[in-house]
Image (cartoon, rainbow, N blue to C red; front, side, top):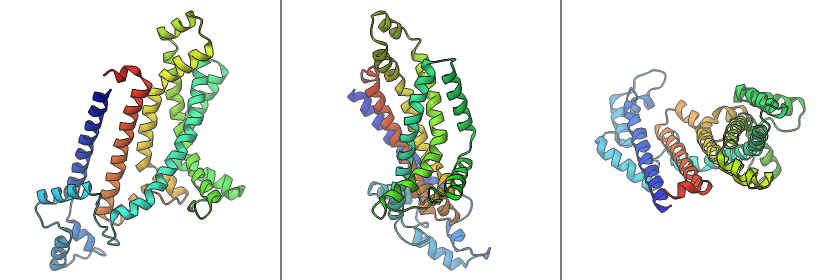
Length: 317
């Protein structure tokens, strides 16, 4: 068990170092001089002296190896650099927006699991019947709907036509708890439309596969109750693939929730990344991408460790 944990942790650290190196080198693979791009206004070429001064200020005049070592040293200390736009620390801005995106993804994941897993299990246990066909059809429709279409439709119906909820925005929990939950719940529901369909299909396929296993037949032959068989022999052995897909989708949502944040005017991390790209704020871009990548790696490490809890065979590795 401990060997498995150590292997997965070391692999995650190596992957994190690899990602950090790629993100650092990406700055040098982008055509053009960052200093020239930052100083260029209206297509007018900046003076050479100003470019040289900015390159020195940003540390771009130093050898690449020295810049890389400085970059890694800053990462180990939690220093992601300073923004070109406001000269503030990159981490200070990310620290404000990241919890909002994590809260949004957390809400969406809970809703999706609450819908997708029970529906998937029910459909698999009733293969070919009305329940299976109805749930499968609904999941296909949900997966075919782009998230910006779902979000826009929700804003139109619930905010503009019915007036039940605000159209979007953000309020901190301390200022107005109820309004805060409502404003987070709307985009979370928009995300969960497609997310729950993905979980449903994975849960249905996995449960349907487990139903054919020999140990299920053996448990029934021993006279174990059907309720106990479903809970401990079928559902529990089906949770591994579901956990994997949930981890992957949560990681993808860290950087891919920009559309829903835009539709609901939600000030999260994904929308902030787009703004940084528009402003050519390289430290903000690099810092945001690194945080998203590291969280994605961490989520996958948690899924690997969760596998160890769900599957006794993994603990023996």
